[in-house]
Length: 470
Image 1 (tube, rainbow, N blue to C red):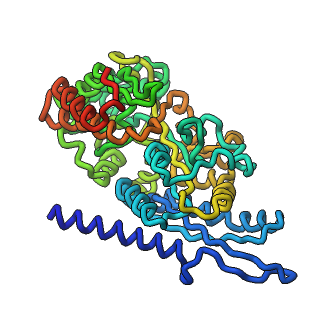
Image 2: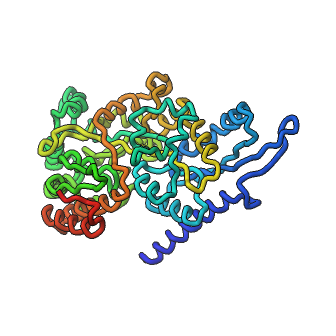
Image 3: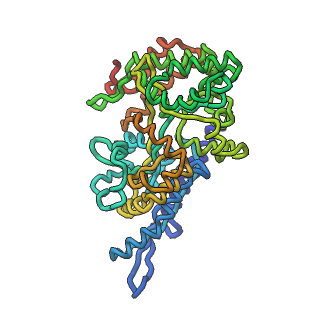
């Protein structure tokens, strides 16, 4: 059965790569076509292909905003006297992230990658160093729309002092909690209402959260294993555990750091959660449907998630319960609590997705023009409100359709505590090894100390001199 599933995934990947090839080539094996415009001016139409991963329907704006900007693209070209015009082909679905990245890499190897690819900023580390995306640093100034991007977000696009993409969205990763369950546990309304402020001040810690979760399990307010949930698979979120524990990650030399003391604290945390019956040992089962359903309908007291999931829950999981209003009535949120045994500071993580231009793009200037016309307060706000992502533009700070969105206006303050993933070509291997330690301890296969030793061995074998064991 496993081989059959693997073959099926390979076939699906190849079919999408073939679709990208067909989109790039067009019916006449060309990405351009020539027509006559007004006054007999010869116009050349260039087809730009964009590839987006998006959870429907809430994230469809990732590629749809590019489509919405095409009239402005062509009006700009006409106004400047440019004889080119742009048509756009989009390929948008909700592929698995691993498959999505592999698909782009295979298409790049074949010389038929899409012109524009939307992906996480951490992919710069691998894709820039392998030469499959374009350094756009010296071109960004040609597009006035990019001047409006929040300056700190540009940091996520950089590697070795160069910029490799344009921010498409941003988000915060809070701790969510059920206010109705806290009241059932015996908290007062004032205590429940004040929890967000206590999280932000560092007064309510990670250790406090675990104690409250354990009390809820013991009182029967939630079932065993439902006191606190993390995500059900590897991902960026687990990095802020390491940061909270005091871990350093990136050495000035470019090597990554594995801080054994910080990693040990992380592994001890997840082990403790299982031992205290606030987390089940099989929570890392990869089942997002079960996970989203459990947190959305109220089976879990505390959970770590993303701001974008708020919109997903409202539309796809609890629409029949009242959607977003149900969430406001029953769910609170704040920064990830301070780990008293670590940095003792609240934290979060933002993981901007970027529009990146493939090295296969023949018309980089047109690809950036398409991106620029999607980078407006009107289009980005519609996407942000629909998807639960945060705005990327300075002008959205006082733009009523954005500021009137209650969830976005409240969750945005968590960015005060945010961190980023490193744009390092070695991070994927580091992350997989670090996560191996989490899964081994959580499942009961290894003690925290044993897990550290296993991870060190894997990191040294895979990264050699590119990792520093601290």
